[in-house]
Structure formats: C-alpha cells, structure tokens
Image (tube, rainbow, N blue to C red; front, side, top):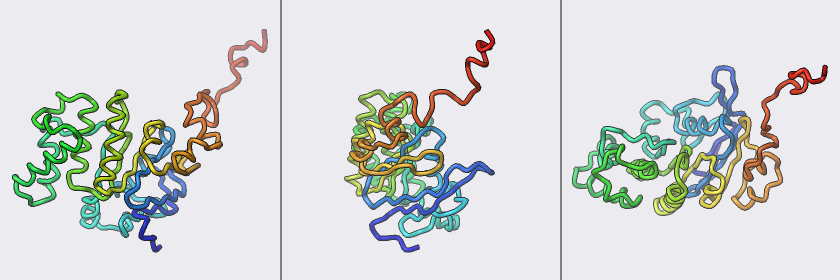
Length: 270
C-alpha cells in the first residue's frame, strides 16, 4: 500500500488478539506529520496495545502499521531497533531509573545510542531539562521529585534524541491540576518546537481536547468516532457523549449484568 506523504503514520485494518481474545478489530488510523492526536476510550479497550503495536513490541494478527514508509511488523531486529530510535515513549508513571540522577536519566539514551563527547551530551541534557523547566533539578534523585517533576524529567528523557514520533501513555495520570496543565502545555509546545508527531493515549478528556488536533475514540476494539476537538465535543453519539461528560450510565452501564435484584432478594415471593 502506498501511503500519502502527509500521513507519517498509517494504521490499516489492524487487528490483534491475546491468545483467542480479540483486543483490536480492524483499526484504521492516519496521523499526519507534526500533528498531536489523542486516542481515547475506556480501560481495557486496547489503547496501550495499539502503542505497543506501533513500537513493534507486538506483531498484529492482521493488518499493519506503517511508520515513516516502513511496515513495522515486517522489520528485522536491527531495522526495528534503528526505526525505534526515531520514536520516543513517555510511560504512564515516568519509569525513571531510580538509582540515577535527573541528569543521568536524560543522558542515558545519548550515551547508549550516540558517540557524542561528554561535553556535547552535557549541553544537550541541560537544553532538554531547560525545555521542561528543570535545569536546576539536574542533581536530584528520582525519590526527591514530586509526581509532576518526575513526569517532566521523563519527558526530557523522551525527547533526548529528538524523536520524530512521541507516544504518551496516560501522561496525566496521578497529577494535580497545576502539574496536569504544565504537562499538557509541554506536550503541545514540544511537539510544535520539535516538529514531532505525537500520539496521546489518555482518559483525561478536558485537558486533552485543549492540546490535540484530532481525536480517535476506541470502544471494544474498534474506532467508534473521530474528529477535531470541537467535533468531538458536539458529538451526539451516545458513547462519546457519555465519555466526554462523565455520565454514570449510558452505553457503558453502571451495573454489571446480573439477575433481577428483586428476584435475588426473594422479594417477589413476599
């Protein structure tokens, strides 16, 4: 399949199953270069699995992921590792190396994947930390950081090698409102300044709709809606409306399927 040049990431008829349990069922998604795209949906709908398929950690049951002109599932080991150097991943809780300082965490990838001299690595580390507002915290250890600061250090590490694609797995989880706003602003700012393409997997509706260009909603392994933030806010689709407005009941029911409550209590025989 020939991918239009404006589509930096193309996901075509993608399906994936764990053993015999289907998780994704024919996903189609196009992500133009330089855009910030959100993938939303309830827990267990396959959002993180989708990120793993993009990164090549998993291979699809059917369909394919095409990134920068390459079909990820068809790459050999060395080609996959080379392609992954163009990607950055911000894990849900940062996943900092606990025994390394802030500075060493950010420098780690540069030392592993480049032959840059230490003087250049130092300048680059300070540049990345300055971009997230934490140049002054470079000598701190991860256990000395707040949750928001740790997430920002992880973001600095994610952009250490100037990736072309940045993936964020629930970047707002566990953050206070101020930190949440800071991270949201950084995602947009860094994507724009680096010219990177960004995919944000998130449950946080309001913050995400302020920073993304396009939204895909996933439910039960399929895309049930997509559009710009304004289109999503105005959507009349029951699942999207329930998710956006945080309604208790709707297509996603409050009660797990069960027999009649009256019958189980035996009240119909009273």
